[in-house]
Amino acid sequence: GGTGSPGDNGETGAVMLYGVDDLERQLTLQLRQFQLQQQVHQRQLQEQLQHRRQEEEHWHLEQVERSKRRDAEFHKQQKELEKQQQEEQAKLDVELQEEDRRKVELLRQHEQQIQQLSQQTEAEKAAFVIQQEKEKGRLETQKQKAAAKIQAGFRSYKVRKIHGPVLKEKRENRKKSWALNRQLELEKHKKEVELKQKLEEKERKRIEDEARNAEERKKKEEEQRRIKELEEKARIQKEEQKKEEERRREEQRRKQEE
Image (cartoon, rainbow, N blue to C red; front, side):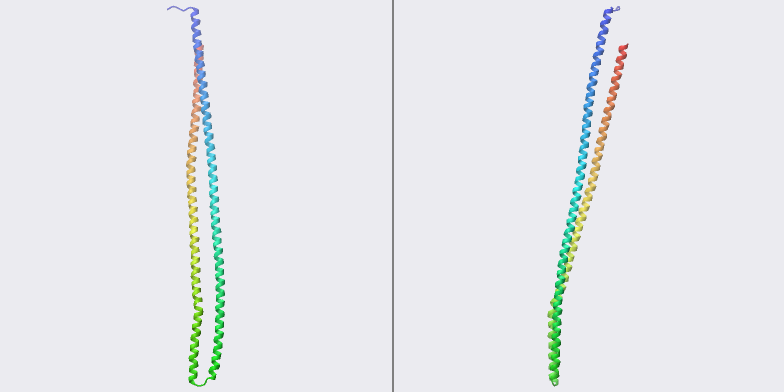
């Protein structure tokens, strides 16, 4: 239980010093490994963040391009519909003009026929008057009146026979024109309804796309916030690890001084 020799004390001090140096080397090696791991982890996080940002920019560009294509297609369909309506209206105008010209020509022909018939009637009337003046006697006069009535009835029959089909054709043409106009109005209304439905469908899709985009932006922002939190935690952990290493070194230094 006595005091050891100076030689023994020197050996003990050398062993303690060797143990401290070995511990310091181990701690330094562990610290470097941890720092390398943190650097690798940080690079991975940065690469993931950059990749996600690139994906988000690419997705945004695709959405913009799709919206442009949809707008261009809608304007194209609208122009084609307007062009088709204009062509149909022009065709209808040509047909109506042709129908009007034909009606005018038929009316002119019938008026000419009526005028000729009237002239013929006047000529027959003049001849009848001359003949009546030549005839003598009540019986002969009555016979001439009967003949005049028969002729008047025959002329009336001829007028009805000539103008009856014309009037009937006019009524039928008016009905056809009304039916054609009605059909065009219905087709126009149908196309307007279809165009309105397309516009409403486009608006609905636009609202859904905006809602979906907002939801995706929210998710991406949440993901970015989580990444920032992880980066901040890693930074704090790194700082705490650094402080802990410094504290250990300080304790080792104090122990060595003691």
